[in-house]
Image (cartoon, rainbow, N blue to C red; front, side, top):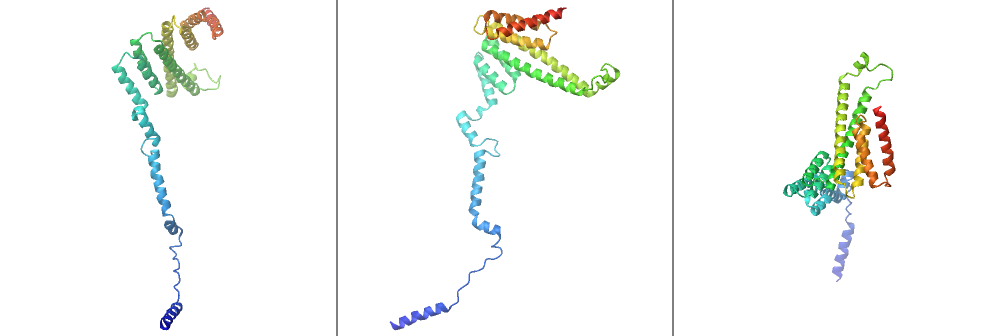
Length: 293
């Protein structure tokens, strides 16, 4: 017992006598900011990598899609067939299979208008009228298409006219445009091109308004005796009046407007537009009488 206790005390004394190992001082490389960042933030890089990967998938970066929203929309709406171009092609196929269904023509024309193809929309509606020549819904939509084309043509002419006026802008009274100097200053290639552009735009404007007026004439004729007759006459009167205001040298447009307003007043003498109709009739008649003098 005594011997064992003595051995134990001897070992403790030896352990205490041994010098303690000092902790290794950090090297200069370990003290660098990026070295410490690599050791302590490696999981942050992993999380960032996952976040970028999820973002590429969720938002469709580089894939040409709109991400998860596009995928969900495709699932519930039939995939790529939901695009405007695909819908137009689908309607064209339906018309080829069932050419007597004017509802599909109307839907196709609406899609074509949304696509900016008013010419195609008008052609589609004209085809529908071969099936049902007096379909009021088709006639009404066709008239609105031609009216939209007329508005576009008017904007184009206004722009061409403004460009021409800006190019020929000269202080008033500086020279006579019919003089040699005036003709020289307005006969350069740019001025000639602007003149040609304005002339073409004016010609297209006249064609567009004439088509619009004719379309409303067809609508008004088909609407006779129906609940839509008064509205159709009022629309015809309006477009004919606007056409005459642009082409005052063509009195036929004024006569069409007067006749349409008069038919409207017979149907609705106390209608919402009755006072305006009477005032416009008086103005147009006075203008025609003055032009005959």
